[in-house]
Amino acid sequence: MDLTTIAGILAGLGLVIGAIIAGEGAGFFFSWPSVMIVGGGTIGATLINYRFSDMVGVLSVLRKVFTGVAVDHRATIDLLGGLAEKARREGLLSLDRELEKIDDKFMRNAVQFAVDGTDPETLRTIFESELASLEERHKLGQNIFLSMASFAPAFGMIGTLIGLIKMLQSLDDPSKLGFGMATALITTFYGALAAYLFFLPIAGKLANRSKEEMLGKELILEGVISIQNGDNPRIVREKLLTYISPKHRNNI
Image 1 (cartoon, helix red, strand yellow):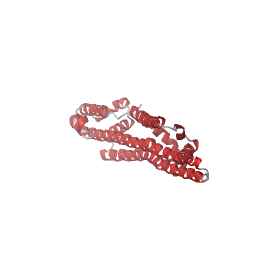
Image 2 (image 1 turned 135 degrees about the vertical axis):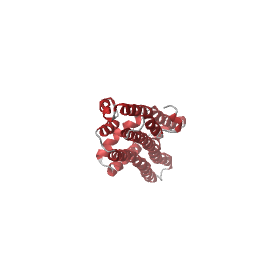
Image 3 (image 1 turned 120 degrees about the vertical axis):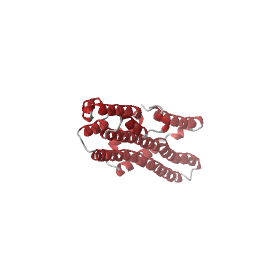
Image 4 (image 1 turned 60 degrees about the vertical axis):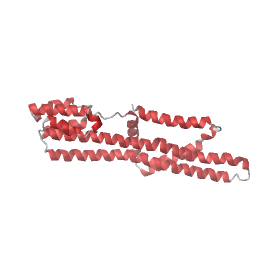
């Protein structure tokens, strides 16, 4: 469970709601028509822009925002270092007995290709293509939330225009103008809140998670190719440490 994401959303909502409750007229800040315009318009425009299967798939992507865990590069380097030592002592084919102990599917497949005698350049080409495909799938989820972040404020403005039109119909009764203006602006408020507290931060979180995952897989690929080339285990570890920020290297 990613507590920072949950804490951020709760803190943002809590402060906004607290500010609303602290003032007068808090009841004006809830409007079903405004929710319908912003929510329905945003979802409808996103469905037009993307395939339905993409929209269904984004639900699993959204789950990663709240449940994802940080990639443990230390464990990966330790595992690859151990494989390098075993390959150095007993030969590359000895890693075939270690495959069932490797939980990461990407690493297991890469080691399997290496054990099967795949040329290092061919192995790199195959798995770099897989990484490129994975990155594109990640970008799709990010782009959906970025699109929603652009649609929500736009439909907020549309709702405001609808409210203003209705307000202008009541110009003959000045007592209704304040209520009409407040109702009109609520929709803009909803659109901005949805975009800047939910959609944009979620897109940013997905981008950061994608960078972490891609770095971890690039590290794995470089490690497996180094093992296949017969590099000294110490060299393998030092090469993999270059993927880690200097401030974290002392912990590995």
